Image 1: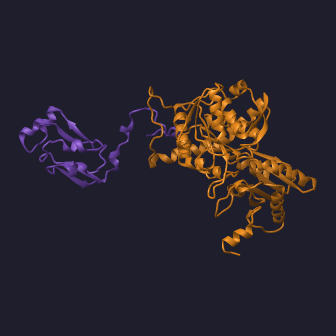
Image 2: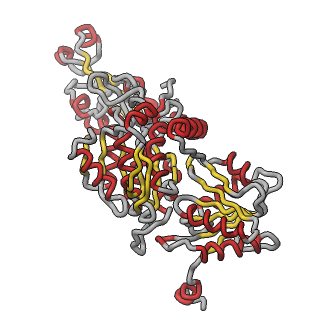
Length: 399
Length: 105
């Protein structure tokens, strides 16, 4: 194991290299451009044996990834924001065909207005595409989740594609120290790629991407449902095996300072680090505040969240996405997951840090004050944090 | 298809014959052999193709025809397992030997 200073995008590129990915079709887009750039460099230097396919759009990148994966090789790609949105229809084909493609996402806001900074809207908009979703807190997590994603996706109980989200700029372009596993250890961990039981092979003709009539379509979708549910146990196994081999612990849901907490802040991605420091500070002040980090969003870890959150009084969901007309995606799912509890905590949603707005102690204090208020009285279900509301209300003709 | 595969993969080639598209039919073409001049226009136009050309000597002779010498020519037959009832043969037949009737199921 060597310690390296790398950017988040490089952690995805190194994950692909260590996983011995054989085909990388990619189209550059800020902030994930460095992933295909770094991979081209690896290939040019002879450090990585892979076919790099420069394509004319993200739609083609995912289409090429599907073709290569259907042929029976390990495939990885990367994109972000508008690029992921352009892939939208093809994503469903990858998951429907049960192809274990792994994709790194530089989580970035969607236009308009055009914005290249950190936001989870791009991946949240693909929530129902049948892909597994992992969110990294750091570059180390980006690398580790990138490697583990292959093992989970390729598991015979799963066979589903996976996305690993690394926050735009906060991770993609930020240099952090990362423990780089040795190639032989990763080889040993992942094993050789065993393709889907039928592949595109002229010697053995078969149909992949076939027609599904109304009398069969639902059965295939039910198969994907089963696979996504089975992924829960596979993720757990792979996380445990990874810890045993590499010493770093992962969980779908990670509680910190949570046992006696009245208020639990739920976070995803890089905001977790800021929130952790904030929680420590609040603890010093004697406030019973805890943190719950969500690493896996699909499959949604309902059971773990129920267990971790059941004793809290208020669950404050901090999220970098918004579904207009309802609230944040995490809030929506978490509320419905907790609805089966007899005694449930109050769930309050906080829309924060959209389009790369910094999440600071000040903005977290603003959220916490609403959460504290929620302990004793009713508050808004969905709260926008650190927003110039007055200016917006004026623009909308309400002031 | 009784077997559901993961990812809707069809593992063996050449099995589209199992998909009997004849069940889609709303209207059904019927050939009236006493009018059919065996020109094979319907056979050429059928997009499926669900019109079969029968070269069997016995069938050629025994199938009725408007004129005796026509019995030397191949006979057309509709394969109702796959005929979707598009009506192209009915539309193209130059001697109106094909009737197009509502399917009764």
